Amino acid sequence: SLSSSSSSDIEEMLVPPHPSSMGYEPLLLLLVARKDTRLEAYSSSIVPLMQAELSQNLNISTWVLIRGACASDADACINSINTNANKANATSYVVLGHSMPQGEQGGGPDAQEFVYRHWDDPSEAISPKLRGLGLISAFLQRKYRPDVADCMEKSKISPKVRLKHPLGYLKDGVRACNGSNHLRYPVPTFTVSGSLDGVVRYTRIAEAFQSQEHFQDDHPVVVVPYLNHTALLQTDNNTLSDLPKSMTSSDLFSSASPKELQRHVAKLVADWIGISFHDFDQNEQGDDHEKRPNHAPSALHKGLQETRELIAPVITAFRQLEGNWFFTGYDDEHGLCEWAGLAQRMLFSPLPPTPSSSSSSSSSSSSSS
Image 1 (cartoon, rainbow, N blue to C red):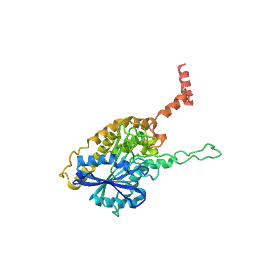
Image 2: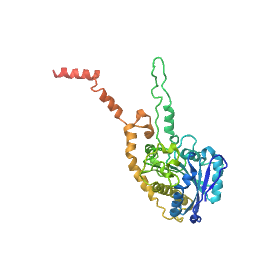
Image 3: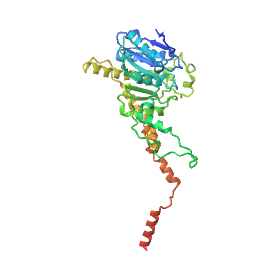
């Protein structure tokens, strides 16, 4: 049975686990949905599949709290987490965020902002322990890469128009910036998106993979072939016409079965959560703790390997051929690309001889005579 309630204007729904898993270790899964999408679209599609994966393979009884927002409704969200964690008898919780809607519209941006603000609250307002943040058809924003955020601020500096410089003048070096392009986010994350996602583009996920590549243990990124943005919410009772136009109008077509794609993503999320439980068990109980069944995260390991091969050409194009600073951490003028310089040499070829080359050529002629 489903229960819907809210102490604020934000809709929420609690999806209890299947009765067959009630004896397993409880977990509260907080899913931050898009505000413009019905909560039933989630509860009837990917949510029961994730519950089934966690129950069958990891002996975890998962209570799923679906909310339209958390960061923009923090007090009510924290109260709801505590209330439902107590109801489920859960001592830990995982946050999931779906999609990347603009503005304060819930989803991935809201979920990551909420976690960033409250992951280590000294007041201990949230009673269960946070295990991590999962982003489904979403990504960590660039503001969590400090060097890139600094470069983005400098890019806003505009050339100054003066009488001497009617087209504008920008002082040399005013936009110069160097950095590592590395992510700084305080909790483990998991990013999963699709190669045919027209809302959260494949190239943006490639950027996330490249900037998080040195931190794959804590921040893995997986691209699922044939997955588009709307497939995760499509069921017999929830068709494309029931989803918001902001999602459907820009999405790409996929010939793959939405149900099969949902199962695959559910398996990936369950594998990642399983790793979190495994690490927590070792930290709390040592190496002799009772292992959970079928713990090997085969889908996740395979997904990481396939993703690396799938997006390698994209990273090469943006990093080496274009010198894009979101892939390098530097400004455009100091990228790895040599094409602009090559084009300029071709346009001005043949170049007139320099004074030094002219004089050396004259002296060599006179010496030969």
